[in-house]
Length: 94
Figure 1: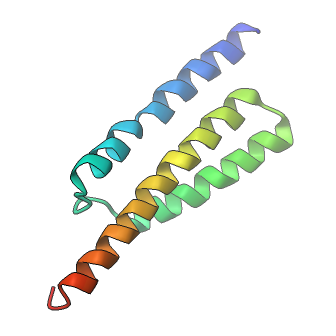
Figure 2: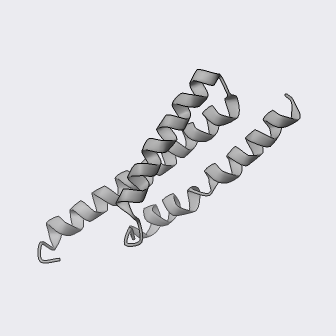
């Protein structure tokens, strides 16, 4: 493994792991008040496109980072949608 690939993997690890606290917070508290659905929707599509780009290039750091990030960002997006749907269903006046 060359130094450029190692740097890419380290960068990918840092940026990807930055989503873990948000997912854990939502799972523990159920609080999704500060989550922007538009931001996470656009971001998730962007990550999916980066993943496709990495696959086409055969670039391991790009593939791994975006695969894991896609899972984590999708979790935030889905958990937010579920929680907000439940809030609207249980409290229609809100």
